[in-house]
Image (cartoon, rainbow, N blue to C red; front, side):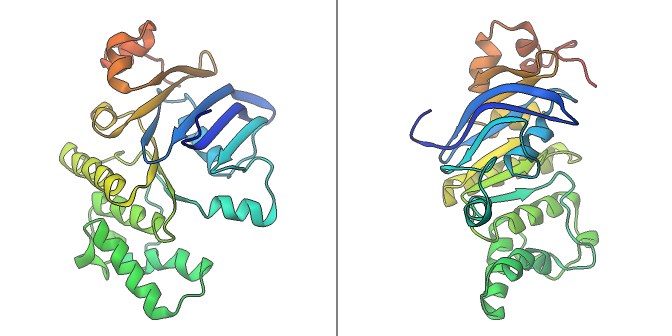
Length: 255
């Protein structure tokens, strides 16, 4: 794998209950890029993400996060690797009884010993980065779905992670709001030099934000394509890949 990679996945097999869902995955994520994990429903996109952030152990193989294998790391080494990442889940997963600022404060209160004034400043700074400085004292129910997604990203950035994982960030958003979220991701990538790993099946977002992608297919239990999305759309020799990227019927069966 290239020296510039911040994530390396090697010979990875994942699944549940002893049954493999995806087998022999090999790919890398490079420093500072937006890397997208694609595929139809049931292809294992979110399952792969959950393994990459350490929620589940793999059946076989390795997931290297900035040089630390989270599949085998324990104690301080594992904590060091996980402190390098931030995660924004599809639903936003904000605490409804807390303001947006209080939600962003949570990781800082849990994992740092900073004084309250510093935590408050950082929380408001992160909200400002995602365009929510005027909504810091609002509850999640008082803002739109797009704002909730932005607040979730702000919370994921609270500890200044090197890698941000976004699970279906555009899900449930209208096209205009989704496009605004795409531009936010690109702005954060440029301004903060953050690496993004994005699970999505939204073609407009893929072509707007993704530097490189992998595409999963449950029928082969693995990766059927990887590379730049524009090149895969135009040059892939796999009919299912071309159909997916050109939004043609019959690309991938859903499960």
